[in-house]
Length: 251
Length: 86
Image (tube, rainbow over all chains, first blue to last red; front, side, top):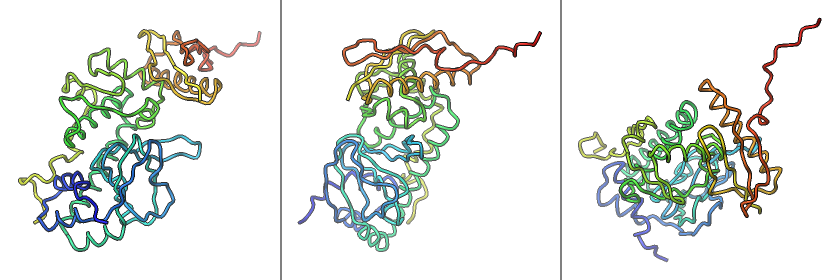
């Protein structure tokens, strides 16, 4: 059964911001075999300790990666948006070292690990783009370590909100600094290493200061510069323009 | 699963919990409430002040107050000098 190629177009657009690709690369990417599946909120798509047979690409919806301590405390280590691979590691690493769960109802394309490995060997520019993609994931993880380790509660949450704003904007999912943040207080707390009660207090403090406006799960940022200053946010670590022609890229 | 709301009253005013959390029972809600209060106090202390006058009100889904935790009861204070033997 032939899969409609448009399902993979979000991934292609994203990888084209990672490295320059040619027509052959584009065709090969869109021809990847995949199985499309709807995943309900909170369902696990990867479990720590499993041997992965496939990588997952988010077509729509949000997912997150997390790890759990022996005491049962959960740390969310990243949040993923449409176009993101949630476990590109699985294409080369033999054992999953963290969990991946759907945050909202997701459509995910599951791509067999063997297909990825063949693609990488045949298409060096795609290999470069995928490598850059995992390097950028690593850069975002580094920033999150700084966030939970060294920023105070207010800056930590402000930083998370700034990061989502920019990533969603680049993915075409946010307009005018207003976006849906489909996370509960508990999930936000697990992403920033605070408690839900504390997160609620900080969110309301940011609202009172006029730095954010919230209604239900929507967040608006009326004064980007002001929130950016509170967060100490610099988007360098997101490497948003990695594939820009004036930036050194592989020939 | 019951839904509990955690409202904070302290020096910066009233912080309403509009979202609530599903928790198995009131004991768990109390434990979660205590953790929340302690994390707020811990950050206050890290900035050099501590305001124990606040309280956390836990309400059920119907908005009924089911438990209050005063900030002072969330921490065991030991700031008295040792009593001297006479």
